[in-house]
Length: 185
Length: 262
Image (tube, rainbow over all chains, first blue to last red; front, side):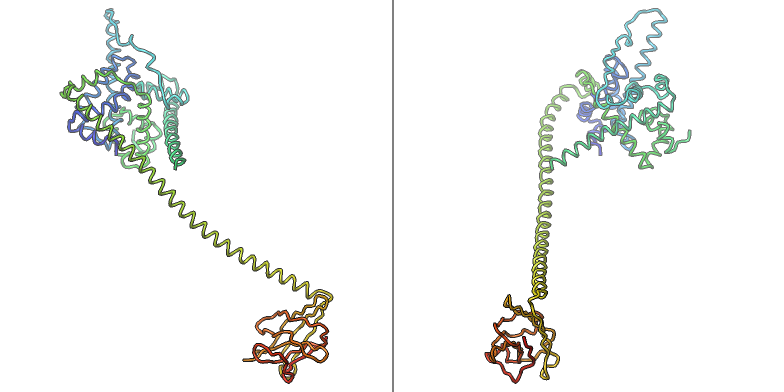
């Protein structure tokens, strides 16, 4: 059972309080992902707002059997962020073609957003890059292996190994906790 | 591409499924396969958990106005939402403290119970081991005593100064056979009863003949094989008579069953 199951059920019934609580619980995590894809705070804020509006409007379609709440939220956010990035790129190209100067989202991109923390930091550089491209930058597999300049098969094995490593890291933390409880006993 | 468990795992389809990159049809197909395969379902859940943790590790707090705007848009109005938030925060923080306290208490109780049960088991085991040890020590001491006895006996019997005298029964008790070991230096007599037929209400008694006078050496306990008898100085012979139960002060010579000269 999901720890927020009660809130999710209430959200489906348009309970604003539940929505606010779920926002508090997930907005930071999902904003971190969005900001990595958009590389622009202004754009990321719009995407975050759009994402949670979609959560509010489409909560009824969420099916816990298919995916966790976070996965559902992530899919919405990733889609919206990728669309926003594509739109802004089209705008830049149009502006360049028409010769009109306009401060674009592109120019506001800040490389500081690329600072990745936590378990991802501990991965080998190529594993980490593969995960970053797919998960945080919203690349498709095809775009990502071309970006990394490796064969698709190799890229897929990077992803697999990276995920395995991440899982093991998280398990290590769990084991450490269990060991601690055991020692305290 | 036809989906199956193998290519879902090998081709990174599970990841694409997580990302939401599959077409609607493919997504439905993968969903059905994942639902029907416990191993795939487990892997997908682990992937979801890893990705969620990754996101929380890289969380960035968004500006506060986004929440306010959102609550305005969905029609709740910021004030009521904020008020309810404050109220909830208080109760939920109490609840949280209560939960933490309850968890700690449960953990403590559980560990105490486990410790207590372990202690009980250990105590029982210890008692059992101690009892076993006592029994073993007892047996050991018996064996040691027995061994010492046997050793002493062997030393006594093998002593060159120890004389052996076999006393055979006469007509009265033809089966009787008693072997006496006499050591004058140590002034001790040991008797090995080979055979003495049991007679109800009577006992066999051993006498030493000193200048024609019979002196009591003791009653032969027919139930024992080896007996220590009284050593009598200057005895010329050893004699066995049948006497009343418990022995007599003077021998009934008519009931003499055997004699051996020293």
